[in-house]
Image 1 (tube, rainbow, N blue to C red):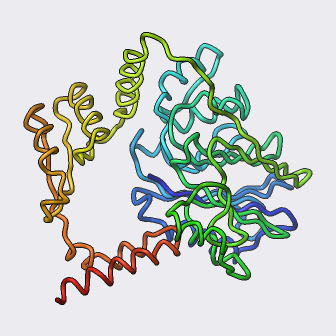
Image 2 (cartoon, one colour):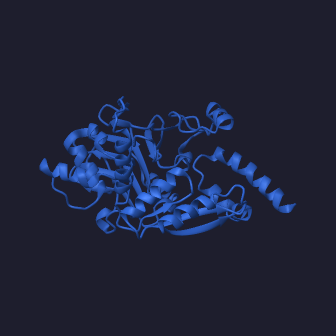
Image 3 (tube, rainbow, N blue to C red):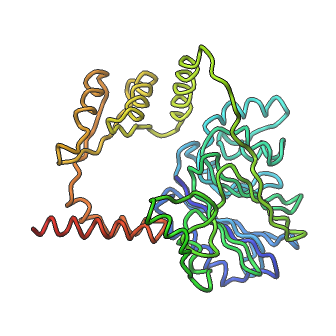
Length: 364
């Protein structure tokens, strides 16, 4: 998990005051990227970089190092005429890297970030459909003077934006955009749907009017010459018919998915809840790497706890497992921290209700 932030001036230029504001808005999500930070600015009209008193594009990044732990993986990353700020991971980056090399691409780093840039350079925005992963990123293309934003197929990584008459802003979390909104008006339709059904991220709307999210499998482009903003899907589901080998095909896809997600330059672990999905993933991961560790959160309420199912998997497969006991006191003790990291503020309504109930239970 990393954190990104960006500001694009559509009319006029940003000033030194904006620079410090944008830097702060990048850093308020430092918990998403505690391993480093980076900032990039350019005046797209003159081509001048690093002048904090006169610029039109700002890219900010908070880094959590997973692949390529050295400074080569720092962001925003500049390669040739492209700049990127990226949150996520491209699981098939090694396969894409090999394909791109056959087309003459040369790489300076071992990062999946540079693979995205080479993919864009070679295939354009349609190349994002080749990626297997989770992502939210923005690329500034100096040659075409365009900004491209992209979100992964299943909206695993958040990407919000806000636009006014003069500027376009994007971010990993809504709290980064709120200081820029002139009037904070709740979106009653989204709030009602959430309170009745618990559903969010179903379309481009958020809990705040004017703040939008880029939807899954979607690119958004800004042509800085014409000031045109467009969105379109780069990928969609395909219809397919089942065959007699469906079970084998499913097993292959599941095992291959786990294998790809275990690529990392830091230790990888699994959350094991005792359910069918986490148990299957943990077993496959253990077969690929017998040293892998699993982690479980178990409840003190035995009727609600899935600990017996966790124990079955752990004991049968001889998997390393660490358990964290969870009760009402844990929620109360860390409640302020939980609220601080909530991206959608109105989500706190349900948390507050649960908190008050837990508190009353504890007092009685």
